[in-house]
Amino acid sequence: MSKQDYYEILDVARDASDRDIKKAYRRLAMKYHPDRNPGDKEAEDKFKEISEAYEVLSDAQKRAAYDQFGHAGVDGQGGGFGGGGFEGNFSDIFGDVFGDIFGGGGGGRRRSSVQRGADLRYNLDLSLEEAVRGCEKTLKVPTLVACEVCDGSGAKPGTSARTCGTCGGVGQVRMQQGFFSVQQTCPTCRGEGKVISDPCSKCHGHGRVEETKTLQVKIPAGVDTGDRIRLSGEGEAGAHGGPAGDLYVQVNVLQHPIFERDGKHLYCEVPISFVDAALGGELDVPTLDGRVKLKIPAETQTGKLFRLRGKGITPVRGGPTGDLMVKVTVETPVSLNSRQKELLREFQQATEEGNHKHSPKKHGFFDSVKKFFEDMT
Image 1: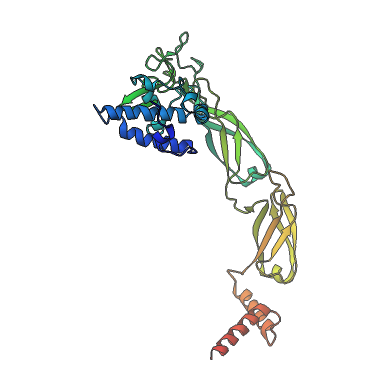
Image 2 (image 1 turned 90 degrees about the vertical axis):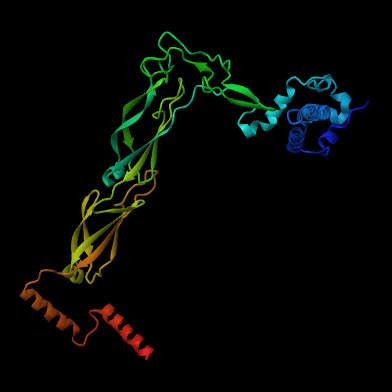
């Protein structure tokens, strides 16, 4: 008696994708599995049939042979579904289909016990001068280092780890739950495939110990807040002889009492007297390289910005040096004596008698205000 077409058994088209075939098998397997139909011979035969169809159509080579030659192309290559018992292949196929649900999966490959160490982060505060000129810093970093006694193996000197007897060194065990075959991490070795019978007395079998490591780090000139310096191999030691992680030094430039930084440029605010602003003069202006002379022209208004080229910062990644922006603010005299007040009143009277040219902004503003209220009426 001729066999039924595999595509018809799974109720899929001949050009169905692997995903569609797997989905169809999953649906039918759930329906006809013997565990859900105890004592039902017809369901058992149907399950064998759909399992045989799935085994062929889920394999690219077998499917190609079947598409070209029909059942003759795959006879003798099946998984033993037509011979009468179903001894174990069903659970293997079911494990492939449902492994993603239960965290299992076929493969049988164990997790490598050799693992790279974790990366570490160190927050480093710098003064503006240190960031601009570069410096060398001593860092004390708490971390995990390889145990010197056991050389990172975790086993007592003279001994070694043995293959796990529960999983046979695979790191995973297969458990049967009804008609599901679930693969889980071995509870004995925790997926490493080996167990330590006689652990090292210093690290207690971990292979690593806590230690504060002292490092000398060169900070390049021009770094800014948010910059990160990577120190390769200075992170945590790897497990069981694995490579160490990296240490990332996160830079934070502290606020400066005089200068404010914006990228490669510096800003500072310098107060000047009323007389210097009106008549002009010369100021000593601070820079990171020392004092420089800044000429203030006559009739300078408060808020005027002066640019000192090349007095800023050279970027850490190269490029032209930034500038220093000096903002002047006119300081109002305070704590005046009677004579000083009298002189200021005389000055005020002399500059306001029928002449608005000495305070054009002031009179222009009030003229605008006057016009505004006139327009309202």
